[in-house]
Image (cartoon, rainbow, N blue to C red; front, side):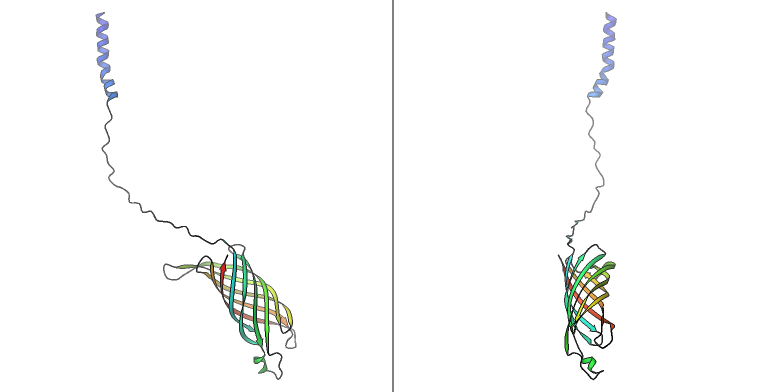
Length: 212
């Protein structure tokens, strides 16, 4: 009996440090963060880009009618941008021609002042899209494009099939405004001077348009 009591007391003595160690609270960490990262976060403004693909353009320029000199021209264009590269455009324009220059070469008058009305449908291809920088902090979206189309020319009571080829440069100061410089050659066949021949009529116009 005395031996059992001694063994029990000895067991309690051995296990007491273990329970004391388990019950002891863990020391609080006194380590502090020495370096705090200085992270610069930019304020990002998501631009509101107009996603509409229709464009209406008014233009004014000059039309050089072969054999009849150069006169002002003006009109409207409407375009639908199929993709970033291709667009379809319809145009209606007006100009006039006189035989003032022709009178210096002949002894008869063909016409005095005659209106020229023309319309066409063309397809355009943006061959060099990019940006134009004005200074270091301002840039405008730009593109150089090629055009080809077919249409009609009404001149001196003649109604002739015509086609046009040309090129142009466009810049976008904003997402809804476009500025363009356009060069076209309107080609059609006429017998106004006696023989059937194709005439090249070059037109240069300045354009201002809006997207919607």
